[in-house]
Length: 452
Ligand code: 5AD
Ligand code: SF4
Image: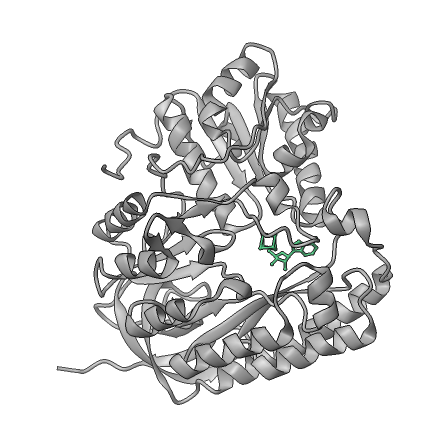
């Protein structure tokens, strides 16, 4: 199977514009959606004003994500006043969660499509073009879009994302994902390896394998470590990353595989959510703080240079000050390189919404989250300072945001490095950079190149 989409992406004809919110999986899905629409003769546009159909790929993981989408829908209504034929579709997690409510919201939504219904989008669009409403929110136990070559909308041309599985079976008590994305299913490994190879042949030098819980990837005999090895073997010049791992499933085999391939990046995103056993149990995370720390020790034993990042939730149901302290102490103990930190947001119909009280007052959630963020900033800075004086192999992504005179790229640990441009080096090249300075978010350095 070839993973190249041969139809032109842009041209004269009906145009779709797509706006994406939420996780990397959603960005990957948008590329699949554009590919499906393109096969049906639609063209892609980057300009919203040019579009005949606007699709918003949405996220439901926290209430503020949904509020942003409602705001966007109001703006779309204004656009539609200028162009009455414009169609607006809501796709993704919010479509799955709210279904008909979106059509009935009075916000001018014409199309609603859940994450497993994208093959049906051309039909839904035709229904809407005919003056009706198009809606499909069926979840599937099989759909992986394995045969669809995603159109690459990210433009750096160096680093690409590949969805390897969909859905989640974990049912963490706070999380809406198992309801909006359905049951876990893995894509056939050959299609993943082919997609990665095609990217490599097109000049990409890094792929990130994506899934809600990649550790439970399974395609017959091929489990996640074996898949990772197959992708790593495409070329030593192709870096491989993955996200996200659930700590309960992080196996010794995975750690050993990561350690044995130089091009499997030494970075693991391992969401802890909380440092308190009582909270972890209520969250239905199925591991303890001790288990998590033991996994961390196993990672460090095999890969002393591996960067660990995490997700943390502040103010989950019943969180006491001691629970909060336990999270802070876990953070110190691990010394995370970086973290995504959130206030707990009740998601309707999840286990915690049905069974626990959202009893930490909003101001207290904010206070705790602020403390968590302040600590993480310190830890990130410390973590980065430890890199000063060391030399890293950096995969160049392009010019730095601030100046054309500087290049930027990432270390294997996924840290961004900014350094002065060197003649003859550009996006997609590897270069050795010695770190001379840092902030909490970025490393600064000097390229080490042999002068002839
Ligand atoms: N409230 C706050 N954060 C949440 N997350 C998932 N659900 C919620 C929620 N209801 C966070 C978790 C997860 C990340 C993707 O989003 O930390 O790892
Ligand atoms: Fe949500 Fe837990 Fe699944 Fe992650 S592992 S998507 S937090 S249910």
